[in-house]
Image 1: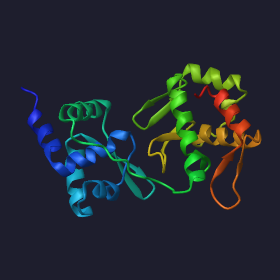
Image 2: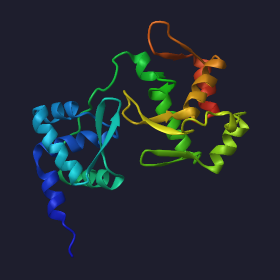
Image 3: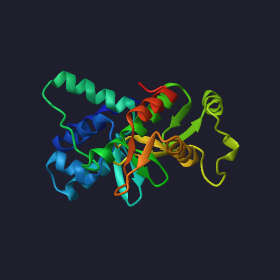
Image 4: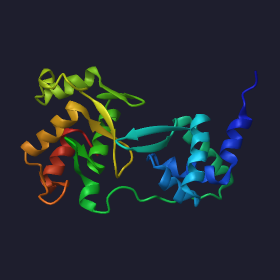
Amino acid sequence: MQPDIVQIASLIGDASRASMLVALLGGRALTATELAAQADISAQTASKHLAKLVSGQLLVVRKQGRHKYFQLKSIAVASLLENMLNLSNQLKRSEIKTGPTDDRLRASRICYDHLAGEHSVRLFDGLLAQQYIVENEENVSLTTLGIDFFEEIKLDLKSLSNKRAVCKSCLDWSERRTHMAGSLGQWILCDILERKWAVKDLDSRAIRFSTIGLSKFNNRYGLV
């Protein structure tokens, strides 16, 4: 049986769906409302298009609280879109502003009981790059290297709550990429605050790193 490229081509070939797919190339997950604005269509029309893209396995849906976010299903889908953009050399991706407008909140803030924002996403990416954690869709776990690393920095893994996952992915509100939640995410935030590398804002959920504190945070976790 021949591969059905017609189905994929027809899904991408619609102008509104193409606009939404291109908007997702930045790696961020976006809501139906944000994608509707990107494609300049109504929310109802966008929902119909998104349902087709999910059914056609080009997109996946992630739920965060009461909200639904859409992402490209895989690197293969992203690579296909990038190749098509290079060939056409006509489409231009516009950035969608997501999350809070306050720069302090965008940089770092509390998400329930763990760190969120730009610095937290950098941390997650750094742990992945150094193979301290592995990610399989929304499942995250420590590797042997990761266990050794955290034990070296004096974390007693047995002390972490056994009532929740040690590692858990959480979709970042502003970055729309994954940051670390779970009992490990909670420990990292508590450790940052105990070492006074950062302090909580009194009037918001922002976490403010000092210059020295951010440098020590970056050095500890091998972040560039």
